[in-house]
Image (cartoon, rainbow, N blue to C red; front, side, top):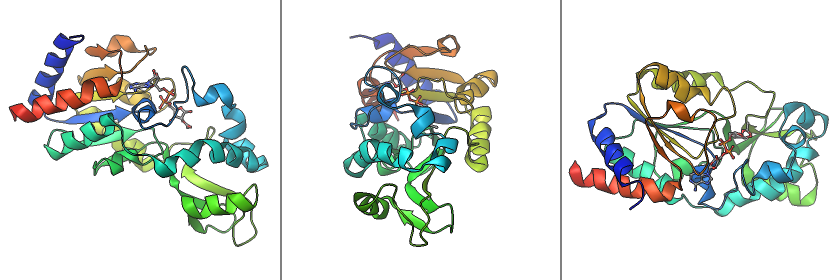
Length: 252
Ligand code: OAD
């Protein structure tokens, strides 16, 4: 079996560590049917992030974002957690996972049963009018989107923006400091499905490392910081997480 040694080491680390956190990115949702941003077939091959996901472009013309959302985020309605999400949900249930720190905005970790999910890039489920502050659900706004582009608020404003971080915006302070605190106190971090190129989020595993945390990478491709990892799996999350968690459950 491929990665047999690595699997064994990972099971040992999970059973012997005190504070375990997961740090996730788009790759863990790929097996739920949501495309990643980078890599083969990534969303940024088709769309220019400057145009569709930057705050300056949104403020100039919100239709740039909503045209993209109609294609990309419409998928968020009917998706289910992947085997990787479910395994992390199970890891929390058996008392071996303190929190999930995620860059994802799709809400799938919560759907998989994780109760402490730190969303560094926000979430697209809540949408707010930048003119009057009124809140909408994704369903509400997608109904409006069928009628007009960009969708409009009841106040007449056309700047309905999801509570997700756009390029050019700072990360929300509370989740970022919570994630940094966890990075400093964890002794095992599972890094799953992320290219580790977007900062400051990508700093989280680096901070953990500098505080002596063991780091495990589960990612299809290499990242620019692979040297910091103790164990590396270049494969799909579903190939590793479910069987490792199953094994840990058998030991506890
Ligand atoms: P990326 O799309 O940059 O990277 C996803 C990674 O997941 C790639 O390195 C793939 O090799 C890997 N991958 C794909 N399928 C996988 C699978 N089944 N199992 C394991 N790994 C898999 O996504 P992020 O790193 O999350 O930000 O991107 C970071 C940020 O860039 C996003 O939060 C978003 C984006 O622009 C904003 O929009 C602010």
